[in-house]
Length: 95
Image (cartoon, rainbow, N blue to C red; front, side, top):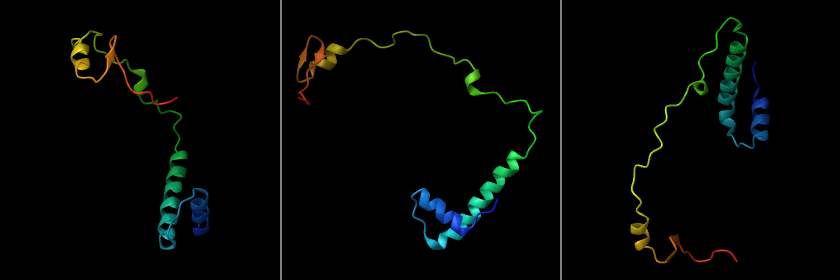
């Protein structure tokens, strides 16, 4: 499929893209080549081709769910401006 410069300008208008008039010819050639490549790929017979492995078919190796750090809440809250019952107190933002 080959595009014209009018097609490219219309696509740019619909996509709200500002393109320079001197670049329109190169965009026309590039987009036409991409569409030709897609047409070639669509015409390939893939009926007897086995699907490739999909990453979602594999099982993820997960680490064991174990605590690896000690509780340091008291150390962190010691330097906080205001703390009450283990919670950080902050100024009210919304009324």
